[in-house]
Image (cartoon, rainbow, N blue to C red; front, side, top):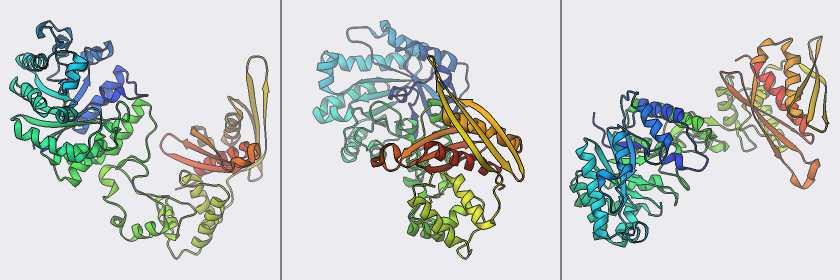
Length: 519
């Protein structure tokens, strides 16, 4: 079925211009394949006239078969005073071999005079010549009207003339760009409505998030009649970023009730978001709408109690519909419902009538007051609940440990010794590391592996330290949060002490103990 709204992804071009974003050719190919499988309609691969990497990408992309998306090469109108057939940048757009070519041109009289420094008539000719040339070569042409809204506000008639020039030359789409990201939804909607009334071709929208309303502006344009939206995964882009397609897609589907990507793709929305972050080597933003780990997180006891009875009371949508999950947080704000729902998610059979519930809640609040934090330490939380419910013995005990650091002229050498006890048996191990915590982690793992060989698979993936009472200086209490994995699942654990090594050991011990905890 033909979509009511087409999704145009520019992560590989506009998104890669964001600070800290750098894709290799292999990265771009992987993301393109993922976007195609997800069901976007256009994938803008880059600007073949700007760098060798993009030229290589298009050479490699020619060998790929895309099932859902059409690949687009991006460029600009011809240079002033240069015949279009002699413009090298336009030639490279043809040689990229993509079915779609997207070019941008100037809408604003200010840019025509101060940036291009040409006459208004020459700018119109540059637009028309380039669009016609690309159409004559069999391309589907998308014209991005740069600074469309600012240009319209400055000189409405000339802005319309630029859009008409692209349309009359054969452009398949005229896309209105809020290039500076400074417009508000009301004016976006009004100008988009005007453009649609004056043009016979389809109209699209391209927004930036400089004012924090990039997604809202895109939706305003769609409400006004636009049928094509450009943006990037996770909002990557210059300055504060582009319109975030990870938000736009479910908003179009669930809120505007319009068709865009295949409905089944919505179930993989979070997966797509995480995938692109992983390839870009960017830590995922937990507060992203729809797909962030905090998007459906509940902390206040009143909220959790309501969600336990009726999820829709504090959730605008079922999180599973976008591949996400409900997250019940545990803190000193928690009530009984928080504990019950969190326990269920961790695999414990706990109800509001369980006798141990109140002691568990009191213990959590006591530990939170002492500096512990369980929102990101579900491993430590599971151990706390397990011990309260089963009154079980510890699988192992750390009897003694020693950490030392020696520095010579060339480097520092850190070493650790750990002695553990399992029942009546004991084991000791020595290890060196890049730092005291790394050495301690290695020694603990070696000692325990003699009894629990499965712990050899456990690796530490993240380590965070937080000073809790800075006024105490170097005697301040420290909270250590670590994340661990066995290759299949991940978990967090926490430790607190005035001694950072002691706090680290507590978190490490919890991590090993959680790995041994049966589901």
